[in-house]
Image 1 (cartoon, rainbow, N blue to C red):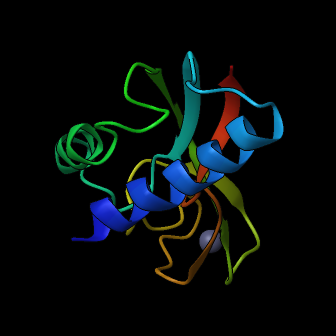
Image 2: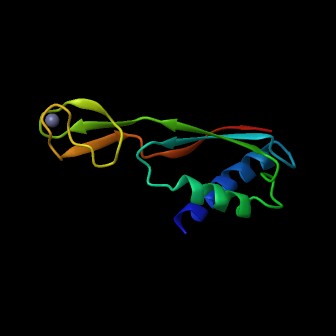
Length: 112
Ligand SMILES: [Zn+2]
């Protein structure tokens, strides 16, 4: 499952941070998920609950921020906000759009 491997990599980052600070648990973790990321949020939450049991993240409050998607049209160079992965250019309707933002999933902050 795609989502589980994402959770595992977040857990690794959190583990490393906690280790650096000599902490035994993490209070809060903030994540940033781009709107164009293909992650299934329900599956992600489910995977999260399974994976964080008995780890430093077991009691952590999870805050998820969704960041807007942005694309650049490769035909006319127009920059625009994308709601969905296959949105066309709002200026010329081209399908050739380079996604510049919105596919990332990152750990924004960790509170120990
Ligand atoms: Zn265009």
